[in-house]
Length: 108
Image (cartoon, rainbow, N blue to C red; front, side, top):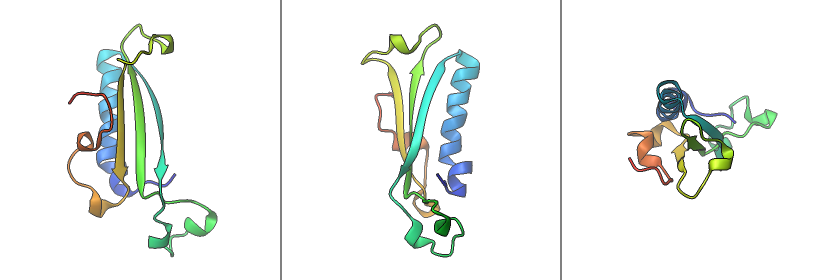
């Protein structure tokens, strides 16, 4: 999945830094899955990745399952903290913090 430069240095990176801090400072375990939605390939016909079958997604998403120290996958309940975000993969549509794009039970 090709993510935009802004995501590598903006909201996406800030979310990954947040996750890393939970792991490093609080010893939490985080299980993450991520992917893309839609396609921007028609917007970038001259991009060398497009003819090679690489999709440039319109949005990128990430779901993080947060487990406190001592918890494992068997401890997952409806109350387990989940952070889900859908971020635009277009610098013109990005502003603010990843927190504004949450789709989760995490209270911020």
